[in-house]
Amino acid sequence: MLSPATTTTGDAVAPRGRLRPQHVRIGAVWVSLMEPDGGSEAAFNQWYGDDHFYAGGMSLPWILAGRRWVSPRDHQALRISEGNGTFQPPEAGRFLHLNFLSAGHVDDVGAALGDTIAGLAGEGRMYVDDTPRRHVFSRIQPYAGAVYDAPDDDGPLDVHALDFPFGGVVLEVLRARPGHDREQLVPWLMDEFVPAHLQSARAGMCLVSLDADLPDALAARTRRIPRAYGDGADQRLSLLWFTEDDARDGWEERFAPHAAEFDAAGIGRLEFASPFVPLVPGTNRHVDRI
Image (cartoon, helix red, strand yellow):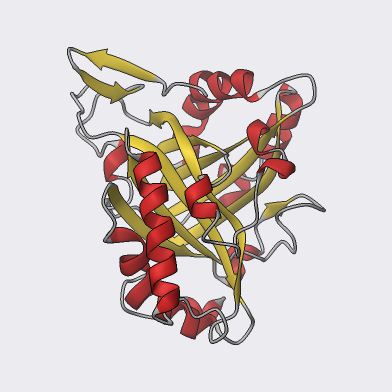
């Protein structure tokens, strides 16, 4: 596994590009693209926002942050998605749920999640039948690091990304090309590609995490989530661009060119890219537009 890209300051650790001492660190990013059946979007959103986001996530030990996002129809129209494979049909995965797991405790979270999911199911709180849905892309991804747009300012650190009032987030999923591997792709992204594009993307930071299968303890309790290893997870990674505004605005200049640039570099290819806006807790705002 790649170690996080960091600089050190005494005994503290700070992600690449920001020198403030940092003792609270991200160990993994829970990335979950979910798709409710047509007609059940509002019910799914209410169940997840009122119950599952908290009972199945934020209340667990060692989960340090979480936020929910949605992709309205006009955002889905901008998506980049390969013609086959995981991200099909292209509009699938209209809800994006993100959590940060504390460094040094990722396995603890996986075990606790497995027990929690089983307990909620026993209480009839998983809504398997009442709110039909599928996991398009659900992973607990080891964290590789962050790149910031202004490394020396007093802006948010990576641990603040899900609490800071960013206007949007863009999820990009890449895979290393044949003849290359993820060990080559990650440093190229973090040292060259991402720093060169943060300003044009109007993004405050970009977080990089490595695709991986679910921990065994969790996978055994969550049969609804497909296993990932057979899908080449060891050569895939995710980029999360946290944008100042709605990334739909100016998408053609800000993010659409990325696919061609990845192709030209010859190291990795883009499998999926989509803008999302933050859901407003406790409401169905935006849900009528998906």
